[in-house]
Length: 558
Image (cartoon, one colour):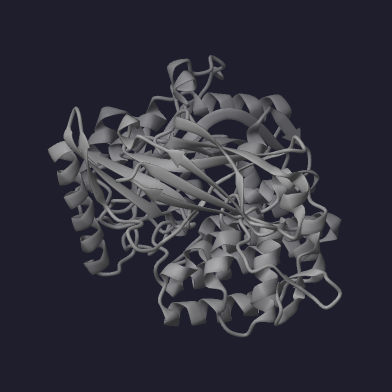
């Protein structure tokens, strides 16, 4: 998502007096904390103070913060005597020290969007809201690609008088991008878990919703979340290789659900159910996509932990979740040991794909597998075609300049619609319109089983470095389905190939499977491209060799 229009033309509404305390937390982040603090100061007079809580940093952070405080009297530095081990205690320190009517949180490696504080204060005061929440944008660095976080919540301005009237609020688990009335947090004793507690946002957000605030939603981008995948130390949300990360996520989510349930009444029940549905649709799918890449010991422990947690869900919790997460949960509950990991990865993809085999029970009901007939898939017989988890396989052969696609049947629904044409394009990872768009006719390959198409490509015509394959299937009955395609591995596939290039001399082409198994392609032109490939290899090697440590305080658990 491009937020530059809002950045170029920040909203003009500004309360006349200082109203906001910005709490900036950081630990050993001297390289970024000044940008975070300056983005808060740049909000203008609406920000009365910036409380920078240094979690006992051992790098140059204290000196940077002292310099900022000397340059602007609004900056107050709070230095903890000992490192807290997490993000909760520093944020609590900031709330305790706040003197303004409203408080908002900022991590040391992120920034506030221009005009954010004014927009949020205006919404809070116009509606008498206890919380004002705006759009957070994930910005991939160094590419600069923007992706909105939970955009469905922020399509238009709205006032939510009680959280249970908008259960989707539980999906936005971030504490940032929101403005809280300070006396509301204090009156309801809403605080973050302290100590080495990962995913503290989950619990804090649940405590906020359990206190039944009036919530104002604004569509403006207010927070820019910087995602640095090549950082020496990954943020908590990116460092998921160890099982302790999943254990921490389960602990935090379980506590969040308990908080919502304890709120009582139908509202607490509805929010707790929505939180569990969110777990199935977001957390479970995200980690299931990554499961095939983990080792056997991780897979066994993950399966065991997840089954134990899902056993606490009731049937209504499962039914409240979208179909992909619900199916994954039912497979886990039905199988005592890890199985069908590659197929589960496909179901967990976005959009979901259900790869063969397509089994049926004795009464012809679609089921996950013949030996798991209790995991039924009868919803596939009734869902609109545009929502079905159609499976498309893709083979990219750069040297031949050919992309081969194979569409699989799905319990008769594909043949019924009549596969006709496939449109393909390569979407730049940095953002922008798909390139190298082509159309091909789908021909019957194996009657009643598969349809195939072949597309000729000149990959040298692509302008960029990383591209995701996008597929649109068109059917004779007038319906269509937009999806991705599974990268097929095999001899000569998913290998780096050097192609002659008129401008750069050589073009390195690397088809690969994303974390969700989707086909993508990475291009590296000329000598500079070769050097970049080597740099990425060294970065990956260094990441595998580095010691496990505490991620920087100031990076949210998302």
